[in-house]
Length: 544
Image (tube, rainbow, N blue to C red):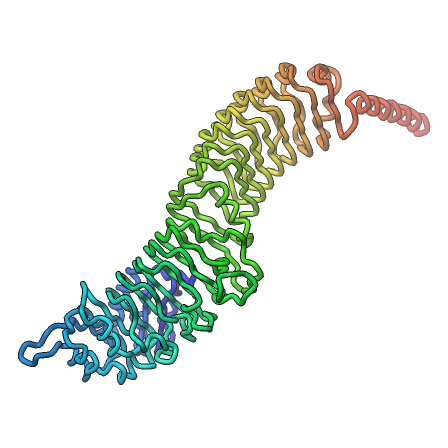
């Protein structure tokens, strides 16, 4: 349930004994949980801080066993550290802090953590360099029942022997979090853990590569959530045993991939095909060559990028995520050089972001099949390099902004299947670079602005299937550069293309109506009119 954000208020009415919301994106907890008197254990690991704090408050309210925090110190009159006092302790959640104060590693063994079969969560932390770090951890072997392990501030370069066989010692481990391991330069085979679902690593600067040793010959088939933060030097993470294609993929079922401040990281040969991606200053993570032959039930549907440097080449990598439903782009550099942007089939998109105005090098902009978009942002006035704008299949679009007239480089404008659009802005008269204009299937449009006569560069004008248009603006006579006019499927407009209306467009070399040259169209109209008059006369005589 990685994407779970809301719990229903009726949850408190259930007769639950155990509730675990670890690794979810729940934004808040319903107050009704405070009434769950049957609850005996409530676990909330790897959640938002406010949710974690509220969970602790609920546990206190329900008199549930809380996390026990023990800060290690020296017992002067006994000549040992206080960690030995843990031997008699029974609890579900235990935090042992300031382990640098264990001066004799034998004291750690006397804590007898391995015998605590009720222990499900263990948090071990050091502050500063402890001389006995590795030897202390060697003796703090958790029980096999452990499900959540947090390790922070451990400063040895490698890990104790039992961690080399971690899958044997901790077969039920679900969550593993490693923080601030300042000198560690290799990782145990955590990928062997058979039930590992959530992996979090932060600030382990000496880890440069995660290769086949991480998997120990196995694969992370149950891993759902990877969160990496400030892994500054991590450059490679192999997702096959050799980091090459055409091998078994080792992280096949990931749901969420969050990577923050890992600017060098690449997954080789390709990253997990996660459902949810959140990349912060970690542009290289996006797949450069796709996902190979990866078979996975996970389909990417949401991508959030923050503080990323996206060159046009890197934007092209998004084509490997064709199932995306949502893309959020926040404070990303490199967009100013973007030349072409297509927004297509975004069925839930209602508002276009104001940051579109920052794409000052954009030359081609296509908005297709975004049925809920009702308007365009005013910031589009800054797109002074834009040469082509396509607005198509935007059913709810009912107005175009006046700033449209500030697109001084626009050469081609297409407005297609926007049935709620009832008028075009007068500011279009300022589009003096416009060469080609398409207005197609705009059923709500019944008049064209006189300002069209100011489009001094317009060479081709297409009006297709706009049944409510009845006439051309008088100013069309001013379009001396106009060489081609095509009208199709506009019966009311076609009806008026005679007499004075025909005179308006007599200067245009090519005029076609419903696929016929204007002269042929008018001749057919006259012929049909004459035939209708003759038949009418015959019927009149026969009737009377």
